[in-house]
Length: 394
Ligand code: FAD
Image (cartoon, rainbow, N blue to C red):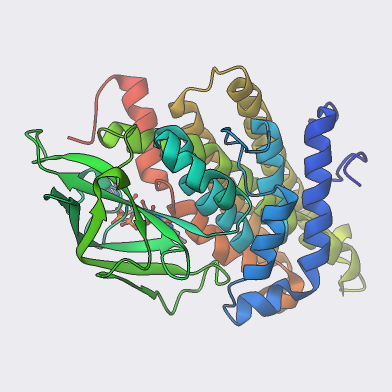
């Protein structure tokens, strides 16, 4: 029951959550309780949880705070609490919120034409269809500004060629937002535009990346686009340059911080529980001074992450969130979550590497969460540019 203070809420930062946000948080928690018994099995088997994603759509858990005609209303705080809660249960599902709601839905809501919005917003929010956001390429991750996929106009529309990598929902979905370079005279040899590409378009093919040991229940894909023809109205009219692509990424970064918080809470709770149960040298681990210090370190990190997320959600609601603040939240929270997960894993000894103890999955999932939507170093460069006024990207 989310009306009770969390054990982990040391500063009681969750005391004053508005009713609407508390309700959606409660819905997310109820959903996680439903899925919890089989999360490890799905992760181990790398099963994509389609039914669960559809259920999240029905419950309004995929919206990520995006607004638009026909969409549910979810505040930045409500969206953050949902991402935290779902990631606390299953990081793969937390990532699916980021793909479906954070990236795909947000892009169409921010940059789509009225017709594109009418066609896609509601079905994507409800998970009646799956949607992908394809920016990263095999040769361009952090420097995706230098992407090489091209879209060339012809008599009927556009012809797209290129390769994308790491794309969630790139296979088995309905539509992929493909970011491609169109001919023009900017310094990269053309400006970047977004295109809505139905996944059944001839020339579009995708394969799931195998051998991935993080976030195993969500599939990332490598997409090949070979002379993919789309009509003229497939282009997103609101995205005219790479800066418009970046507005989507900035908006989703705070969500990654919330997700990291969910992972960290799960690890802290598992470690605390273990420390009270496990007896060594004739007493529970929890009576050992070193273990108490480690629990303090973990709770201190969790508390700090809560303060970051709650404060920035409030700024976001007031329309005062600067993108570089979200960079700081992502930078801080994914670092801290990795540290909490590593301590929790170690505190459980050998049992810490068994899935059944609900830490190792979070630890390896956090490795991917730490990387996506801008690595730690890239966030540091964005923050550093603001601190010094000097760009290190040149
Ligand atoms: P690289 O850019 O090759 O970086 C390698 C290392 O070099 C990093 O440590 C980085 O910080 C460092 N580095 C790079 N440049 C600098 C610099 N100038 N100074 C100092 N250090 C530097 N992309 C999508 O488009 N759509 C998706 O749906 C999507 N989903 C993803 C899901 C998962 C699970 C993962 C892991 C990735 C996903 N990505 C997606 C891709 C993700 O955004 C990229 O992995 C990320 O931007 C980093 O790019 P890279 O992996 O190519 O690393």
